[in-house]
Image (tube, rainbow, N blue to C red):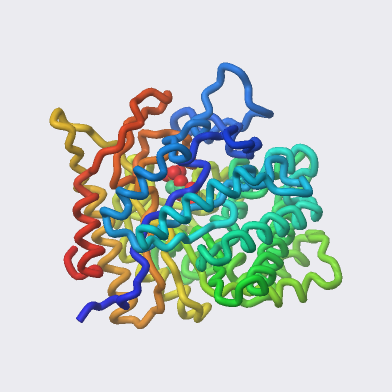
Length: 480
Ligand code: BGP
């Protein structure tokens, strides 16, 4: 007997802005992602003011899924995917974000894409926004720091919920909504919520004020979605990087526990429907003015999520004696105060630790804390791939990474009793890296001929992991 439920959603995940291209096709307006360049090595991506002539913006053409989705969906079907996670590019639907009427051509694109998926029995799993907010909403309104933007988002959600209510059952509101907790790295406040901190402002206050608005937007969208179709399953989506104490010194155990609030704050509100006490205490202690209004409490309480989606790539470790104190600039994805290397783990070429057991640990902690179904909606290994002379691509490291993580998720379900809806590994097809803007940081099981400078035929080919994952799905995880 299979150790996973037979309706387990084996799938693959992507985000519209990282693969579609067609950045100004079909009436689409510019989004925050459309003005981000490739980052210099080890540096965050540059955010330009607007699209500047002569600069290379990798997601403008990306892997041209916009025009080639039928070919790609056929490959997903051949792999046996039961679910495909992508996002709706907000500016295809509302090019500026504040229009009265949506753009029909954009809506039609997703009708066609969802029809194509359903034709192949692939369930669409849709994130309302995955770092794709309209640029106009940031320039004109200051992004989600402005409460007016809540209404624009909710309208967008309502339009797409209504339009696709018979085609899409699984939704998530904001991708990695908690990334903004990394507010010392400007790309996280920018991409998620279109916010830039001005000189003289308290960045933490800006972040939490914005977070409050985003939490309201998410809760309102959930409530409206459930009205439109009570059968919708609407989830939260967080980046979950567990934080371990480097040793058993109780000071480190407590430090790790406290640091984990960086990961728990958003789901605490989204699942429970109210602010956790540790956050309220922090606002009070630090004199943060979060600008909440009467009635906000009810909005949060009425918009709790049905499930918790999360990405899992790596773990962190902290040491109070590291000298990496609170003032340390955290400029790397997931870098936190007091972070140190974990001597027990190896890492990818981009420094992301490889920790399959961490996935089981996280599944247990999240299940114990929230008691709602969990969904691993991203997990994967970014690496440079080599195309052999005969065109084959051998990616044993990727297979190993995925295999290790699947073994651990099976233990979490079969041994620990965690309720897990599915697994959609990240970047099922090669696409533009979010943190670096590169193409060479590849996650796919399908290779795309495209390099960091935008050269290449865009032809697709199968890596070894393609056949491997096909077998995993066909055996419901029995044959790894
Ligand atoms: C997550 C994002 C994705 C994605 C992935 C891998 O944070 O939700 O958009 O790209 O990480 O990150 P990267 O592409 O930077 O390697």
